[in-house]
Amino acid sequence: MKILFVQTAHKEHDDRVYWHQRAALESQGAEVVILSLYGVERNQAQQAIIWQVTDFQPDRIICDTPLAVLACRRAHTRARIYYDITEWYPSQIHLRHTPSWLRPLKAALMRLVYQWAGWQSDRFIFGEESKAQTFRRLFPRKPSLLLPYYPDLQYIAPQPPNDLSKTLRLFYAGSISNPLKGIQNVLNAAQVLASHQPHSTVFLTIVKAEEDKDVSVPQNGLPANLKLIEKEAMPLPDFCKEITQHDFFFDLRTIDDESTHSLPIKLFYYLAAGRPVVYSELEAIHSGLQELPAQMLVEPTDAEKIGTIIEGYLAHASAYQHACSEMRRLSEGKYNWLGQQEAFQHFILD
Image (tube, rainbow, N blue to C red; front, side, top):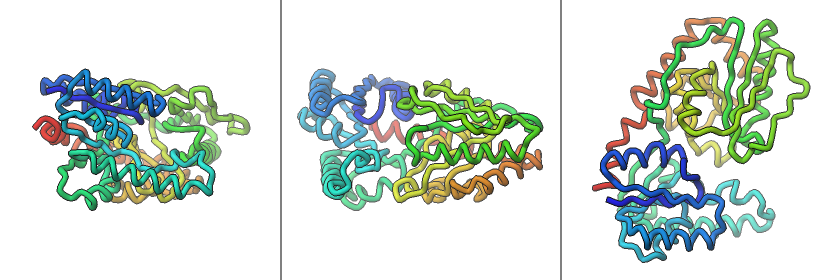
């Protein structure tokens, strides 16, 4: 069987598609092609999609955006078209540079296109439950699969917990140029920890988003014992090795109507690394990962409270070690790719 992934919002080596879905399909003998047109102008992307569909003649096409779905339909293909829905339309990023007076109209038009792409699709893949509701209501008879963002544990070999008595290794991965992603909240929490632990060295490693390769975090006024380490975005296998070297993971994004209904992908990778996390208290986490201890979900601007949570682990080594083992246990028992791979293969190949 010939499978074509058409991506206009994700790059070729996307974590979800390249390292998980592609590998799962190829393991069953499928011929897989990934067409990534990330950053390509709309008209050029449409033409490239039509050409690829016509040339490759796939049996199945898996699309990541309305643009991809509608361009495939224009190619008059007989292939079954799947819409893999992991993004909101419209999202904040789509409206960010739009004048405020024009935003309601643009948002309404994008929602119509979003729903039209659903009409033109044969089947749906949903990254999370909240993004499935519109399509299940509008197209209740179309087959669908809920496929959360769980990692393949072959990429993440857990390491024994580090000694926290003298060195503390904090970790953040994501945007440092978009303030809504919470980099300042992470810096504030790290500074509180460093000031409360003057005899320890606190390292904060920041793996930047690809679009931030030319941006750096200001280091003026930081406590002397707080060391910032910036790293460029890296391929998934390298990222998975990197995270096993750290002690605590942060994601302190601003809580708004969009973010609270979006389940952060990296959360499941951090669980697999077997370390405690401190995340903004998002509704999507409450519903998508109910076993996560309540104390790990916080008001993202409350740096003192966040510092207190981490210091509680520092004061009780057994509690920290228990939290580490519990995170990995959750990952191995439920939140991993192996548990959903077979359902994905059947949904595409049958």
